[in-house]
Image (cartoon, rainbow, N blue to C red; front, side, top):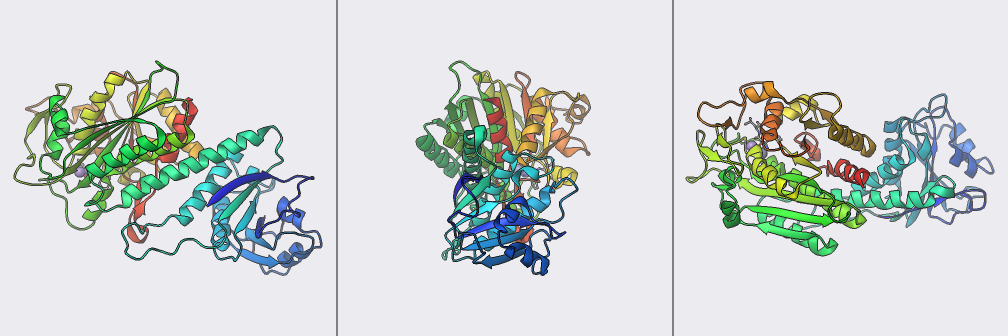
Length: 504
Ligand code: BES
Ligand code: MN
Ligand code: ZN
């Protein structure tokens, strides 16, 4: 989809806009939005609404042709539910109406369309949010997961050029253009994350992720470094290496650098869990649904997707991405429950369950991050099934060191999530959870005693992050959908990109 924004005012009216179709909102109480009123020169629109041909319920639509006084070939009326006394619209009504408009646009003979919705009237949201929501929804609608199908899914038809009508240009015109460009970059970043997540695990291997990082570096002028097994051994990454032992696929440790900020400014570091397939290892997982463990690289995918977004925006910030990629497989050489390994920072770890592998690869990646003297480190991982139990699929789990209410980094990430519509929710760590990780034979066990598995996993990571400000996002519930709509979601690219943008 090709997006643009345009302000319509008294000189440049919506009625005179040359377009295949203009979509405007109507409400359940037969009320017309401002844009619908503007197009209702001869009463065609109010007549259609009065006739009951459109209910105004969220997502209902009615296509009119040849509306008197309107230049556009078609006017699409889209129901936006009930607005409240002051004309405010619920977020769900808004996004539902956007979805319905896009769906109808895709069936039209028109090539270009205008969406003239009340962007400023969404409850608790601003114009920036509405623009971003529209771009992401349009992008979602045209996303195809046919990379590995011999016959490709039909591409989206109909409207391919979408103009978002915004309030009169004025001073914020340039700002809105920036918001649009950022929204498109986020959408493109999400697409990369989704593509990587959805690829089968025999294709999306650690080597594939490394090649993707190399390609990104070429496209956007990032520095890239790929460390292989020998280099990881030299670095004494015993924790990471213990996970890859059972696999035939070579591990890759990927470092991407976008130094768009001031020289010498401490970088913000993103660290992604990149298990391209998590069988559980010797502590093997049950068969049903095991295919979904191809998504265990979605943390890594979100780092690469976020890099695509910030590369496209050429963000003025120093950002480093680290991806620790390998498979977790059983074999005669695989790590066994009871094995004790030494992490890069010297901590010894008793591996009581080889399926708690994410924290093992992250431990060394988090130690490695120290060398960059980071302003902050955020790791992103499909770390625990328990996080889905705790938060469902709506919020990513957010953990930071201090369990007081005022951790600045936590607030930054929470805000970014709210702004981006890609929310997180705070969960605790601390001394009590650390106690659950005690081992009789090593410094730490890689699983906690029963209870609070997401918290003990995060507490484990915390041991490797004491030299910088750190946050952990558990995205087990948010990174992909199961069932009929099985597929990667592209989250938390909107959260991460917004977080970085806010840091500029
Ligand atoms: N990749 C999984 C976490 C996961 C499970 C994400 C299901 C999404 C859906 C992780 O490596 C894992 O296996 N975690 C274990 C930890 C346990 C052994 C302490 C889990 O959550 O069961
Ligand atoms: Mn696992
Ligand atoms: Zn895993």
